[in-house]
Image (cartoon, rainbow, N blue to C red):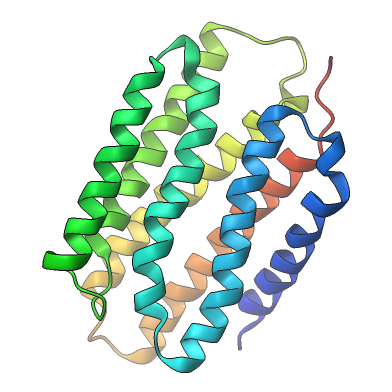
Length: 209
């Protein structure tokens, strides 16, 4: 295992502890962010087991829609000034239906669910940009560095924009030399480290009352 993977799994262990230790001190939005982290942590633990058993692609078909619901639930709470709540309900139901159809008829369990991943990544980028726009249009105080959603947003925007570009490239590199493909996956792991670092900061900051 390469050092980026080692560092990432150390982060996963740390992030699995933060919600346990700080749950009673979390604000409502921090608890919603923590649910995203919990979904990611559970997936990563299961991914190590399923990878050893050769069923990691099967796990992805379940993880992508569950993770989508968790992330969009954060933005459903945050973007009340820009979008009506029912729009998020339509978005969530629509993505679930698409994911089921995609997994059953288009990209079945033994195939990497790239269609759902690309749509989810694009949605997360759009929602993070919308959230930054709302923060600029409707400032929530003079201390943005103490706003958990600011850190969550930065992680989402950096990771998913970078991962989407990598994902487009990696699809063309599936049959490329192993060295090149591994370097791309190491870059993705590095982006994951950045994302999880921002999640951790968002969970640890103390919002100003």
